[in-house]
Image (cartoon, one colour):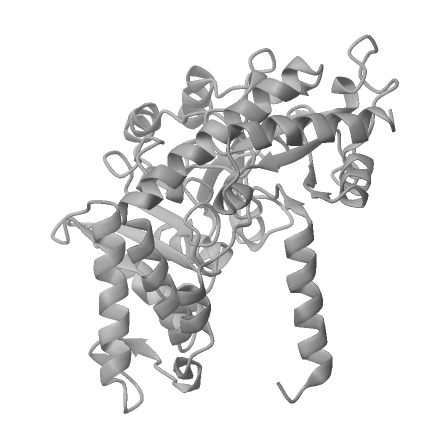
Length: 402
């Protein structure tokens, strides 16, 4: 590489990734084939429009790549092309969610998005006030039950009946338990809302058959491709095909509504990852991700740490470091904050992210918890015994700072 400064920085990042234990729930490690596609000559081609309807010449191969990616996306999640459509052009998850709202939710005060509040595990793009999704539309939120720290579907139904949202969003960034898609379908039907699932964190688990699929119940499903799905940073939008023409509306929202030409190198890399995720070894990987998360959760709990909702059904764990570090004390006395926990763990070679917990009394800048995930280290080949050791290492580091 002629640019030695960038070459040096890339090399430094490679070394950093190799020497740490990565427990960031939204990160993973892609294959060399995915990296090859990302760095290919496809970067050079501009392909504004969709397959067969481009605004530039020379896109015969571009069409083949985009069509192949669509085919693989539908095949991976066992979807009938006559019943589902998919858009593979979104650059990442946030613009994908924004495109759905732009297409399907009336603008202004008439349009209402109902999603989980950010501090209970939702995402910025589920209508949070600092996001465009909370500025351009009216947003209402639901959360978890204070006692169980799990979804209370009766309460969600009451909120939906009272607020009558245009769209209800399920699927979260910091909720470790199984989501009952069927109950959300019932709630959406009860109030005449579109049911959208953001399965960004869960896509690889759904593909691997270790987490319930939302496709039987949802109208629209969005997902990033770089978390448990183990692909590049990109996104997909799936839409039911019916008289509402959801897919056509969403396609127009993606282009020309929000984006110009798609990133073909990115789409090709997604196609590679989708094919990899459809192999038997990926299903074994997904099972191991969940096994590892449960073992990590069990061991942390055994060591005295409080886990939000008591454990996990997925790849992620939400850990209360503020109370959990010293169970004999009350909230706000004697614990370790999420920011401090993240910082000291990083000093010890373990990478996590600070995270709010439900009903948190601390600031999101320095919250009461941390979020842990097992997808990346499972890709590296770690199994249950390794995560028992990781839990002990986490405990040793944090207890020395409580």
